[in-house]
Image (tube, rainbow, N blue to C red; front, top):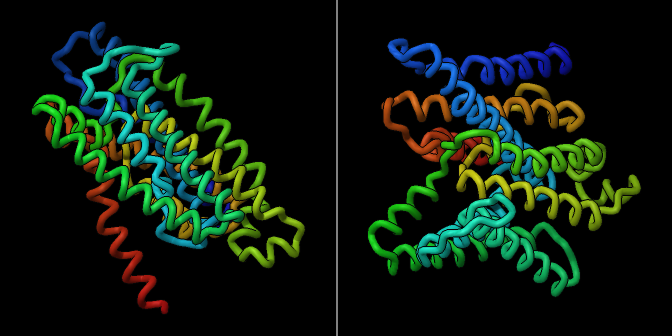
Length: 320
């Protein structure tokens, strides 16, 4: 099957999830006016928000795997998610309540934490006078563990109510009303997508190795800086608004590579559509499985991602 036809099928899947998901779980006993209000103010914004967030996470995961030549790399590899989570945890623990430029305090604090993580990684890379994948990975892992420890410490010294709020946020959620959060997230994901599409050729060469990329005229260091900042800011914005939703960035790029191949000219749009559709499906499951209550969507993605992660490890071991 040609890549164009496979991309068409993936696109149909993504669009179908947007069209079908809002209608699932509507109470037939509710009046038509209330159903219309639920659809326009809750269901449709939530589905679109989930699609944009899933697309962004999946695209950033695809870029990280290409940059690091590592099939297990995720958008959270560089500690961006841990930094955002720490910012949100400190905000909740201090009992703060404010908004800035229409952004609620939790999201603002989370994005500030993500920027802190990005700044630390960038500073260390400048200190080492290089931007090697090894330095990035080791720094990211160290930051993730350190920030995770601070999050646990913050939870421990918080009262029961704040500790539960922190835990609930760390599970990830897509419960929004209206289009405000979607409008805040859309510019980050749109800009990130445009940069990735623009650097599709460079990503293909990075996958082949730095030596080959350099021999073909790619400024490897500069390209890594651009991709690093673009994807990190995108992930920071997503985590600030949704919480840390794990494994989307690891699973989706691999599934799309199996379906459409490794050429980023085809892989990028496929990952965008499949990532968005996949998170919409996970969110639909999370709100239907124990309705009228909801399971945090991060729980569903992690339940799917854990076995997938083990499968990758076994698959990598059998090939070596």
